[in-house]
Length: 77
Image 1: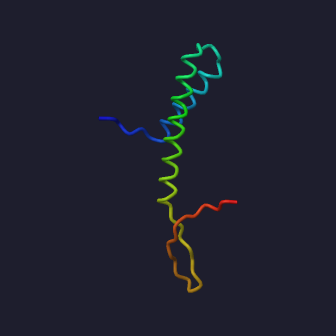
Image 2: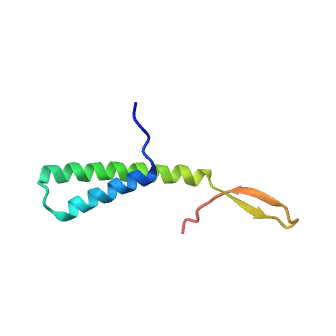
Image 3: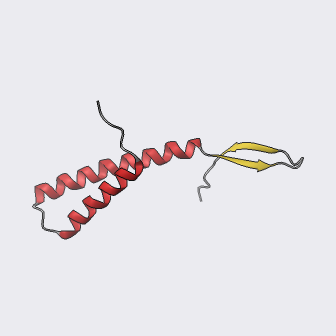
């Protein structure tokens, strides 16, 4: 059974991989494996952020003074 890894844990692991790669003392094969692992983690983080964004709602005060919930929409410019 795989344990679900939190966004924060993924980001920490991604930072560790970046530091290892920046040192430049890994052989090519290990560097490629680390890079692939980092890309996989990056994709997982991106998916987590997308899921969180879909859950976010904003409270909007209407003209009548009532609060209503609206889905969060990211402006794409």
